[in-house]
Image (cartoon, rainbow, N blue to C red; front, side, top):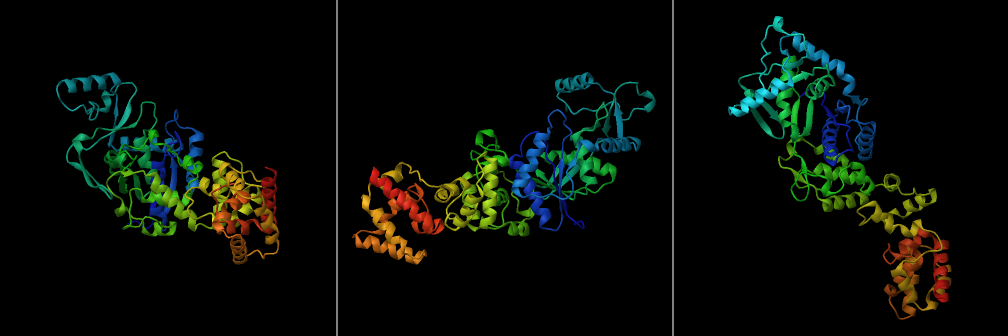
Amino acid sequence: MPDQVVTRFAPSPTGFLHIGGARTALFNWLYARGRGGKFLLRIEDTDRERSTPEATAAILQGMGWLGLDHDGEVVSQFEGAARHAEVANHLLAEGKAYKCFSTQEEIAAFRDAARAEGKSTLFRSPWRDADAASHPDAPFVIRIKAPQDGATVIRDQVQGDVTIRNDQLDDMILLRSDGTPVYMLAVVIDDHDMGVTHVIRGDDHLNNAARQMMIYEAMGWDVPVWAHIPLIHGPDGKKLSKRHGALGAQEYQAMGYPAAGMRNYLARLGWSHGDDEFFTDAQAREWFDLDGIGKSPARFDTKKLENLCGQHIAIADDAALRQEIQGYLAAANQPALTETQSGDLERAMYCLKDRARTFPELLEKAHFALTSRPIEQDAKAAKALASVSNGILNELTPQLQNVSWTRDDLEASLNGFAEARETKFGKLAGPLRAALAGRAVTPSVFDMMLVLGKDESLARLQDAAEKAQSS
């Protein structure tokens, strides 16, 4: 193994950060971070028609949300075009590449004839071994001289050894006739120049590895460790696509999933460490290795994602959770919490985190702490209030004036109040929820009263009593 592990994530900026790309970035990040290595980011923006600054920004934002920090500056592949051309011309000067003057029409005619004769349509250029003196004054591309016999073996850490016969490899174009480099050349040069030691990417690139190895070997460069990971499928077993729902990392942020839960789920999607399902970032960095990646496509399961997210919300630091919720609200184009609301939310967090799988669920539970008087009751809560005799809340409020505001004393007082009226506290809970939160489903009455404090709790009870009297 090299002295320092260097991985990279190299997306094309033609859209948002796809969830499959996010997982690829995560695997590279985990592998490097767990070994004290470097995780680099390169934007493969050579397709000038489809690459956009907005897409680059979306990729960076998605990675920022997921907490996948990279080392060094973001590398632009397009800006390396001169270096890419330099290597192609070096191979040309070394006799390892050649000028090909075949036109598109000639290549098409060659393939048509090969197809008619039942032969391979792999183009064999007549210019491969032509004397330079025979070269016309015409546009040309630069092609690499592919090996014509034997086999290329891709030693892949996930797929195992993959053997490709060299007679199935064409003389790949390195430079187009306008002098611009092709993607396959740029990738190899960038990975070499950036010192990338491990290429962890989707298995749709597996066949590319054999063609890219031609360039490594022609230049005498070390071939990186390959790890081609299976793609993600939807619940129906087909490649994950728009019909399966949200695809971009930022869409999941806007739906209210916590980043830690998404990291945990994506790490587990195609990789395993024994039977462990729930784990922290620190554990993931320590445990992650290439031999834990399976060969079969993983299936995206929203229920599993929500289950893990709920577990991460439950153990999260309250202040950090409050900050992440503000980020969620911004991503979802919802109003930010005020400073007062934010503080109230953090104070209430202890009674909100259990069983909330997403931030919308948590905020719904937090409604009592975020709303202000007069409290509007929803239909169920209004029904609970209407079913209470007008006097109960009026009687209860002055009794609570003299209670010290601790859980034990509140429980004793409310239970005693219920007993004195020969009923159970459960009969009081519905009206109290309605009065305090305007909802029928809330955290416990005692938690709400403790979070709201004595003055606010009594004021809400008094409001509800007056409303019940007037109705």
